[in-house]
Length: 119
Image (tube, rainbow, N blue to C red; front, side):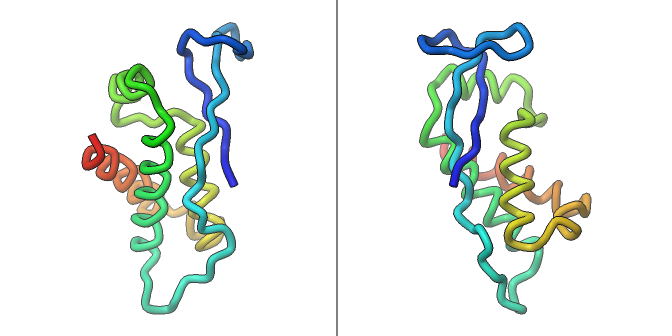
């Protein structure tokens, strides 16, 4: 399963979104669709796992320009990446639990920590 991520890079075969040239780029999800969590696994552990998995998948698909653009807006994540984090986590622990601010912060922190480790 994957999600589309849009960037503003110069490219061939581009779409136009909100007046910007964007390139469709598939961001793979963490692969946790419908995976039940064991009782001993905390919600924060799931958030950590999802954040790290999405970061690793995204990092495997990007150009140096994509990375520079993302880092320029740090700590803010593009909506497309944030959406993948939230949807993947919701598939594992449910939407209500994913809506908790602590879970959302843990997802984003795990994404950035994994990305830092990969660079």
